[in-house]
Amino acid sequence: MDLVITLDNQSSLPLYRQLYEALRTAILRGQLPPKQRLPSTRLLAKSLGISRTTVTLCYEQLLNEGYLQTAIGSGTYVCAHLPDDLLNAAPVTVPEAIAHPAVSWSKYGHTLSQLIDKPLINEPDAAINFRYGRPAFDRFPIQLWRKLVARHCREPLDWLDYSPDPAGYQPLREAIARYLARSRAVQCTPEQVILTNGTQQAVHLITQLFIDPGDAIAMEDPGYLGARRTFLAQRATILPIAVDQSGLVIDQLKAAGDRIKLVYVTPSHQFPTGAVLPLPRRMELLAWAQQTGAMIIEDDYDSEYRYGVHGAAAKENRPIPALQGLDAHYLVLYAGTFSKVLFPALRIGYLVVPPHLIPVFRQAKWLADRQLPSLEQYALTDFINEGHLERHIRQMRTHYDQVRQVLVAAFDRYFGERATLLGENAGLHVMVRFHTSLSDAEICQRAAQVGVGLVSAQVHYLNPQRNGEFIFGYGEPSPSQLYEGIRRLAEIGL
Ligand SMILES: Cc1ncc(COP(=O)(O)O)c(C=O)c1O
Image: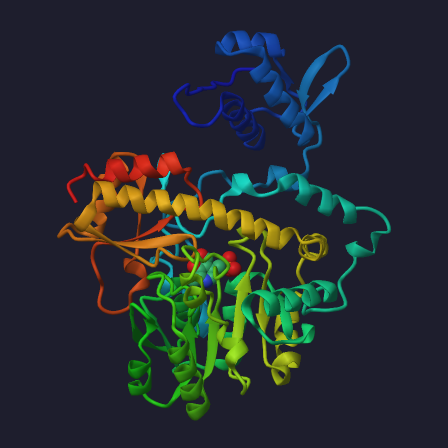
């Protein structure tokens, strides 16, 4: 075999993978033709100066994928009959400027094509990472989850079939309706619960069903970018409404006009400032919606976690009922998710819609993706009905409360007056306002240099673009990592 193979010991790609890529590319390009005999693993390992196990691993992979075959006693060969699609596979490298036919996007596609250079998520990759929106994965009861999934992953095999119900598995919807009534004072029947692929899909379905280009949507400013992009993609007119220490400023909403079709709010833990909308404002918001005919999207994304509510203070500080439970006029579309209390890749959330909207939402959900995977829905039903969900939430609340206290103490110690913490009594993140004149990009860069990953809140603002505000997710890092992270930040000249 006269093929030059270069391996790079410094590369992040393992050696066996580099060798695999080199041989596979040579086979696809015909440099190693069908029936060509390959050197023995011992010989190739010796000539490349790598271990025989590395070569064996690579050969095994190519054998499994049908690129190589073995003949007893006579070695390893390139397969005589490579599948056509492998032979015709596109070259591995794509040229920088690809010649392609003109694309005739829909208006929706066109709008998205205008948005692609504005990334949705810009997550740091550092030794100590304050990414937000992640629970503590190492505390997820994985053994139990495995048991529950295995319980249903067996015969009879009906669960392999399409589900008859686009709104989701009925027992799960029943379990969620009961859970929401207990924990959030949401009032609904199981039929009103439409299971979604997370809150993102709930917001997407609502936007599709209610918004035409030019329609007005009011939303908190700062507010969740995932929701804002969905509205923008549908070419809604977005009206930014300021947020103060008590959440959405209702007077501003009232002044924004009476042609607003939807209002998007995160009343229980405003994203990202963490403000909690007090009861009088909730009632005012509902009264305004009733007067103007606007619908309210209530995104209750991490309301399960509230802290610092002990003793006498607990009474005043107890979670305020969801807007949905206070609404007597079917104005609220309530969205919740298991992304924070369980794990985001589960992709199960719920949308509670007023009864008269159920049939259209069911249709929309069917057309969007037909149904959620059955197995996870079955496992989640048992998880809730057997009491594991609420137990897990209780345990995690204690854990996050401790982590949160470490974060607050670290800021106190290392920053004192130089930083203000917002919304630290709930959720899985705090917003931190650094009193500095440095730009956010500069701060992120300096933080990265000391191995700390930061997320600026800037992208969540529509107007004006604030400087020095950062979202500190504390679900992921351990308390000691977190403390060390803040200590390092104190040394970057903020
Ligand atoms: C404000 C807000 N809503 C909802 C979500 C969750 O979305 P999903 O349920 O699609 O994972 C997030 C995730 O970070 C969020 O920050």
